[in-house]
Structure formats: structure tokens, C-alpha cells
Length: 282
Length: 109
Length: 139
Image (tube, rainbow over all chains, first blue to last red; front, side, top):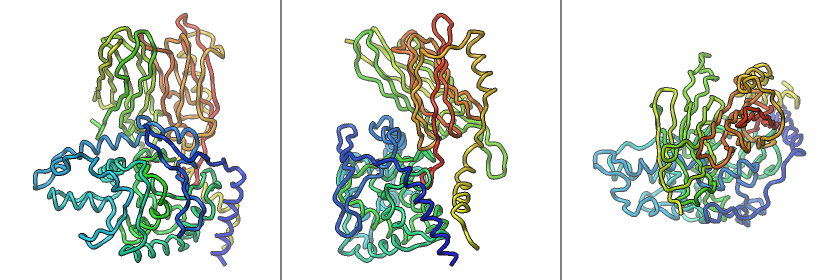
């Protein structure tokens, strides 16, 4: 009974503010320094919405403007910091990223669009943090970086940027299918004191207001994202963790199997949108 | 010196003599306002960039006195107008006495 | 235990409000700082523009622009912040215009004020109201 009343209260809260919703931006394309970003695309057939929409579309004009020019985007400060790290020798092998990747971060154009993806050589689904640490440990002889920390998030942003504008194209079948299915299960499972699933906000109620916040589809094509709230880059797993705290659930650990599965599933929900990272959100 | 402070400036490569153009600056800095308290309730001391200036060939373009109300990673945009080619210099002063600088050349004509 | 809608709203709002400074009117502080800037001159409205969003999605990063043709200095004040001064600009001989933009923190819904000092010493004033939303999950 308690569960029922709580959920009803949450529904009422969302409904109250729905009337105050500002209409989301209808433009289909955003151009940043000449690169076209797809803001709206036909949804993949395995999800229950007609159209996938970038989180950019749900923000106010002022927040949107911060992403429309790379100089105005404070996330680019961290990209600059990552370029320094890219060129810094670390570890027992006396190498930097640049020692092997002589073509620069540009060598990784296209990578972000496919991640997370099954890697046959590694025998598992890999995401960007895995690849960065694989290189640090095996090629540089350096300590792995912790996930969701500034240096890691900045390097993820630098490598993501090389794929900006490319369509997200995450494989949902093949060897990754079981993990994808586990992610989907998590997406629809109600958890926490507020007894809510990802889908309650980001599938059933995107476009309406949750208190003063305009709910998006919870797409992760723009990650890592610079948030005005904490004035730094935020990783996908850190955002998942924040969402779980907001619904008063005990978050899974950053880098956990659960969040890895959820990332794979949520990433695939954005197939057709563009890589945007580092984006700017509230 | 605060960690990881990195200035970014954007100045056009060239400009027409006497015509105003835009300059944008951004520097990574936490801008601890002095208004916050830690988990034990003790005030966190202020630690901000308190002054910014931009000069061109020794002449001032703009000076700014920043307070704790300026956002993390301070952004300042303004306009300049010059008559000859030269160099813009940018200086940010930190509460801890550190100074961060950057410079950009520009051609007139 | 029964939760009413109101309880739920309060419960959620409490968590968000805790991260903001209590919203008060710091009118006296604003007056003092304005008088100091004006140095005895009467402050008149007009002759300076201030641009700020009507609704700020997050009070941590609010874009503010001022344009004060002919001004030698501009002071921006946030009247509802615990300390009203935001930034003071002085325009030098190589300034292309007496205009500038920055991003500031606002502790809550309030008026932001621009005071401009003209070459003849006179002081102009403009203000804009910014609503700062206390977000749901985003804020």
C-alpha cells in the first residue's frame, strides 16, 4: 500500500508541472563549427518511442547556446587538458598516447559511435574507459585511471570529439545480445523508495516537467557532458548513479556489470542520433 | 597554484584598422566563492580568479574585477579595436598570488 | 504511512533547496555598493542595457551581457546574492565597445543590475529579473 501511494504521489507531481512545460526545440539539425548534429531521428524498432531526440532539444536557449560554439562550451577546457595528457609520458614503458598513436586522437574517429561494443580479442563488451585503460596498462605500463574521475572523463571527451556528428551505431545483436537484454531489463525495472524505472521518466514522460526540469529521453550520445550543475564533465555511469539517487535507490557501482549493461542498452536507444560529446546540459 | 588552470582565448587572426571585433576568454578555475561550508559546517575559504586584464601592444583593452559570484571556469567576452598589427596579452590573477597568462598575435590589413 | 502529494513535493524540494543559499533581499548591500560606485552622482535609468535570461536553468551558470555606449566602467550586481558584487569592468583605450559578457551565479530568483559610469561621471542604471529554477533531477 505504501508503495502505491508513493508512486501515485510521484505521478501527481509530474502531472502538476506538465502544464508548465516549455515546448522542446523542433529543429532537426544543430551545426557546431560546420559539423552537423542530428537532433531527431526515427527510433530503432526495438524501442517504444517514435522518434529519438537529443537532450539538447530539451534545454533552454541559453543552455543550448553554450554547445553551439566550441569556444563557449566549457567542456572543451577538459578536452584541452586531455590533449596535455595525450602527450605526457607515463608508466614503465616510457610512452605517452602519442608515442603509438602517431596520427593523434583523430585515429579514433568513429570509435565513440560504436561503443559499447563486443571485442573479440578481449572476449567482452568494451567501452571507452576500458580501451583507455587497456592502452595505459598494456602498452604504457601505467596505472589504470579510475572511472568517472576528471582525467578519465576528459580523455573520453577528447576521443569522443573525434566522432562528433557521426551517427550512433551500437550493435544490439551478436555476442553482445545477452548483455543488451540485461540492460533492457534494468531499464524497465522499478527500484528505490520512489519505485521508478528509467522508463517512467525517459520513455513515458519525456517532454514534460519534473518540477522545474524539462525531462529528456535520457540519451547518452552527448556524454561525457558538461553540466552547469557541477561545472565539470560527467560520465555516463556517474549520471546513472545520480538518477538512481534521485529516485532514492542505492546506485550500482560506477563500472559495475549492471551499469555496463545499462550503458549498452541506453546507448542503443540513441542509434541514429549523432555523437555530441562533450555536450552541455543543465 | 590551483590545479589544472588552463586559459583559452579566441582572437581573430586579422582585423580591419579601427573596426571593433570580438574576443572570448575562458579559464579553468573552480572559483570557490567563500560562501560555502564543508560537511563539518566550517566555511570553505574563498579561492577565485579576482582580476583579469587584456592589453594590446601595451595599451589596455579591458580590466575586470571578478567576485565570488562569477561561475566556475570564468568566461569573459568583450570587444577590441586596434590600428596596427601586434599582440594581445591576457592576464588572470588568482587569490593565491598566481598569475596565468596567454597571448595572441593579430594582423591588421 | 501515507504520503500526500504535498509531502512528496516538500520532500523533493528540501533536497534541492539545501544546495542553494536562502533567498533573501539584500537591498541595503546593493544600495551601499551602488552609492560607492556612483561617488555622489545621481543614478538615472537608461543608457545601459543588461541582457539576462528570463528563466535560468541552473543558477550556477547564468549568462549576463551589458552594453553601455560611452561608458568607461560598468558594475554588475546581483541584488539577491549574499554579496551583491558580481564583476566590474573598466574599458581601456583599445576597447572596441563598452560592452562585455560573462557567466555568473545567482542564489535564487532576483534582479540583476548594471551600473554604467559615463565619461562625464554620470551614472546610468538598468536591471533585469532572472527566475532561477530549482530543478528536478537536472538542477
